[in-house]
Length: 151
Image (cartoon, rainbow, N blue to C red; front, side, top):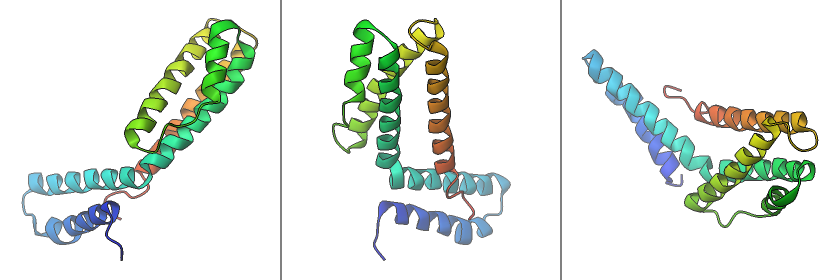
């Protein structure tokens, strides 16, 4: 078996659950052990797909920005179009997070225009943005529950 950060964190979770947890006699310490296991599980999940989830989110945001650029005019339309054609600057989490932030700020700007009823089909754009945000949050929630503590 290959030793990875994810595998190491999961082994520590197993150790806490199977060896330490049963030996703990006080409720406070037992709760602390469970919480530590849960936090380690979240960290293991994050390590496993941190880059993938950001790359997927950035691509999904770019797609909506491309659609938004068609229904808007002027400088914002040009900036949305340019962002929709951009690519991730690298695979480091800090790079992907910075790009995700940049894309989300443009998405917020486009959403503001749609909510003011400006541009062609503002209701369609508004719905597309809300759908995207819901999909992003659902995927993140599923990821965090993929390996809950105690399984």
